[in-house]
Image (cartoon, rainbow, N blue to C red; front, top):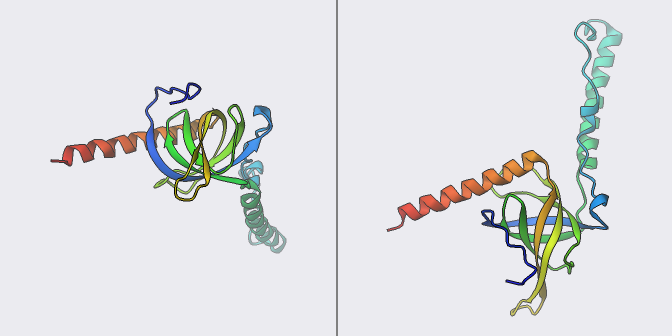
Length: 183
């Protein structure tokens, strides 16, 4: 283990999952994916709803439904980030993860990552991370250089961190069950 490699004492579990990421100029250049545009609009107050029996108000209700549909489509497209680089997650803890990638990245770099845990609802977690350590390794078969990175989360939503912790506990329970069933 290199000297500069972090020595996290949290529980880490192995994981095999794809990961998208972008390299940031600094920690301040990270911007979380925006929430859907439709969340910015308020529902009408009780008693101010439109009457579907009035032809003009029925038309406005129909237009409102169509606009909500279009706004939903647009905000879904706007809300997704375009990650330029790809990696594979090798292990994860509540405060960070390790990845392997073909992109050379230096220690101290900041990344925005899109993480999706296996066997979880299809949701990409938008997280900012700092590279705590980096090392290279040459694949003997392909002769290509791969880079292993240790990342620490620096900006993560509490619900995303809870999802990761729940995933880790779930994996631990599965491991304990498998140990109990072995002869």
